Length: 373
Ligand code: GCO
Ligand code: MN
Ligand code: MN
Ligand code: MN
Image (cartoon, helix red, strand yellow):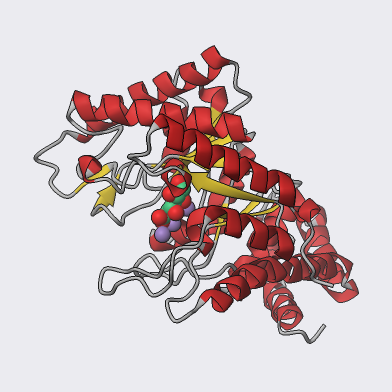
């Protein structure tokens, strides 16, 4: 039980298990792990795939020959260990050239460089078999709104995305773009900070059908929002192309906590939503092992992420099979559907006086999660 299998579709970014624990106050605490080692270990633990930024695999200054050798060795490792690469992304935030944005830089030269880098990352992704291209605009934001009109930034963002969907279509890639919103960090304010803002923006693109969202639990929480409602809206619009699973406390810095480790009830409802909706994309973990950990702790982190998902999924199954919970739900449903039509004071009062039994229901869910049912 709770042993992850490839069919569970668990994936990890190279940058997650490979995170070296650097933070704004302290240096790396762990050595670099070679991408091929990550492939081997994730496969051993039962993952389905691995994801990457272009530069997690190929250094930004690699020569074409070096690039080809690195990609060849990586592909060999994927083959040996039967791991897929369903998603790739592009790093448009680390290099100082992107300090005032990439796709939304006010400088056409920087935007050109960024769009071309993203195209090359798409080519790499296609070569590795990826059909999802995530774009997280980490530097697409501002501290000083006097310097850049946000309307210009949005226009540049749109033009860049139109060029990127053209690149996909022209090359015949079976690839879709998933935009990942985040409210802040590293910028003071990042443009298009929530799933809702991304969804509205997507409708203004030339090829809206090729573009969806990649919501992240932590990012919704950083904005003080309920990730379940954000993901639900994406599903409602058939725009949930991918998802970043982790955990986060409200009103904190970007914590990247292990999935399901902090907010048990919130995580339960998220897994319930994913499972009940029939979402069949990757369950992608975007989190970091605690800075206190050595390599052994890193693999515990990876194993724990997947085990927790399976444990929550098991709780969802029990929720649907629990006689008492289902009886309360049936009672609530009956009340809503069979209560009287409102056509005067008496029927109005009937509805006014009704209790909805949500206390009872919520307690049952709590007890389910506490292992009492
Ligand atoms: C963050 C983001 C990133 C992106 C990644 C993929 O908070 O740093 O979540 O981890 O998901 O860059 O585009
Ligand atoms: Mn994040
Ligand atoms: Mn993310
Ligand atoms: Mn982060």
